[in-house]
Amino acid sequence: MKKLVLVSFILFFNLCLKAQDYKPTESNLKQREWFSDARFGLFIHWGPFSIPGSGEWVMNERKVTVESYSRLEKFFNPIDFDAAKWVSTAKNAGMKYITLITRHHDGFSMWDTKYSDFNIMNTPYKKDIVKMMADECHKQGIKLYLYYSLLDWRREDYPHETGKTGQSSGRKGHGDYASYLAFMKNQLTELLTNYGEIGGIWFDGHWDQTAPEGSADRSSRIDWKYNEIYGLIHKLQPQCMIGNNHHLSPFPGEDFQMFEQDLPGENKSGLSFQEASAQVPLEACVTMNGSWGFNLTDNNYKSKTELIHTLVKASSLGANLLLNMGPMPNGEIQPEFITRLNSMGDWLKIYGESIYNTKAGFAKPTESWSSTQNGKKIYLHILDPKTTAITYAPVPFKKIKKAYLLNGGTPAKYTLKKGKLELSTIFNNNEIDNVVVLEVE
Image (tube, rainbow, N blue to C red; front, top):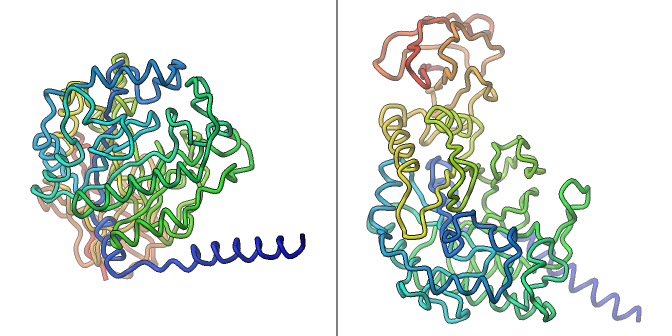
């Protein structure tokens, strides 16, 4: 018995050591650098769950059984889907990458997979959505990231007995994680083999196997064997980044950290228990209204000002903004999304210099102002047009060579004495963000 315990410990230790020994390749580090410079991406939540018009959690929230939910497959026929339009919409918004749902918690696969019958090829549409999006992203020069759910409300072999969600799906079998792990690895191999270069894999669902929200225990009830999953991904495409929406500090093998409905360091949503990592790139994923998937009754859209301020504050914290849209089941993008995305693109045509390729500013963002930095240029974002002056100390620079408004180049008034910056100038009350450029030494 003691010998068996010792062997088990050695095996466990070796698996942990293997995960801890992960060293990103040069191509992976370059991808991380590109990702941090990109600053702005589009999240797309779309699938059969869009049909009821009640968000992507409809199967769980309405306690729909697997048998009943599977009927949606026969209704999913997005005849108005246009990959070129979707990608160009993101591009016109100033976005540099797209994160596309490939398989959400309902278990539906949006590509031609050999490992599940519940997929896009068995709908009336019969076309590979992932392929069309991948081809168009490569064509238009947009990086493609793929969202993949770790949990499944439909499959019998998912360890549903210990899961917090999907308990009304009518599954009667027992979970078999070895089988489920093999399934996931097979699908991930397809995604990373058949669709060209992929920027990253965006995992979600780890939290289904943790203690209830608010509990101090954040450990998982199952061993996900991330060393095997992550190792497979990095082997198939070494540059491919891995992120996991587990609401915890990054695990070994992960290449970026995300925050759901929050900026790094915040927990307004009650989901972000983690501290922002200083080791990997950061990303905040945020909805344009209150829903991820298409929702007929959610008209609580954020304003242009709110969205731009969110982008600015994320950049000021050294994080990307992954802004979500939930297209309609026919494949059409709602005009409310189009309008907001276009307005952000127009703003970025003028102020993009203060967002792209920047690092976190010297001060954390406030409701009044924040800052970003690129080399010897510091960008002060005046978010409240009523602000007449900024006083801050100590600043990390000794001399200001030049100070001016980014839009138009009008000189800005300032004093810098003993590390204390005082900025006083007349700002345009009609601007969402008056950006002052400081060229410093």
